[in-house]
Amino acid sequence: MAAHYSSADTRRRTVLVAVINNSADLQRAADEGWYRIPQRRAPRRIGADYLAFYQTGAFREQAEAQTITFYAPTRRYRLMTRAELLPAEIDHPRATDYYYRIEIGPLQRLECPIPSSTFRRLTFIHTTLDRLLQASDIKDLYQTDDPFEQLWSALREHHLRPLRNRLVGDYPADITLRARRGYLAIDCIDESAACEIHPSPATERWEFLRLSPGQIEGDLNGCLRQIGAALIRLGGSVLNTPVAEAR
Image 1: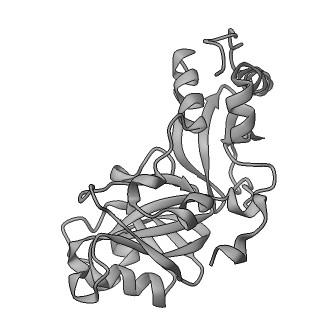
Image 2 (image 1 turned 90 degrees about the vertical axis):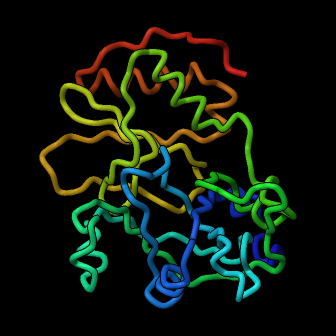
């Protein structure tokens, strides 16, 4: 499988590992091409190039319990109620709750499913395609010093209120900042990434900024200056940089 991803650009693609705890959701992902995440339980960042699925103990009969066996490219994101997603279950107690519907491409099977030797209860994991294809255990997927988290923390230190997972068209901006005359959408991905965000037909003004993980790690203050300049264009406040020195 790794031979299909020989280029460095592709192997740096982002992956969100999500939990599948019933066969109906996995079958829906395979047959209908979508997966759902409750908005109220979503991680701080849902945007990724791929989804990978951790199958819980509910899959013991298929010998896939507590493993990541399948992954798929993401296509589109929408925010819908549970009743809209599953009209046959319109009387469900959470029928009016909102979910992110993530439309995906065909499921792909890892050559070597990734077991969990120490973790049994997982939430979401942000990782890279490179790690996913090489991991021999779930613990190999975890990243320390995630650039996204560094930027999020720095913005909070400046008393800004970053918004998570705001959909711009059919893709979620990693971080959104509100200013007097509109919104700034920030994507924390490589310049070579295939995904693009486009403004939805709305009255708000949007500006877009793409910051690669390498930029954030190497020059966090420079990234903050770019963000500050964009916020000024939107009628926001000046950011007082520098913050703590970039690592």
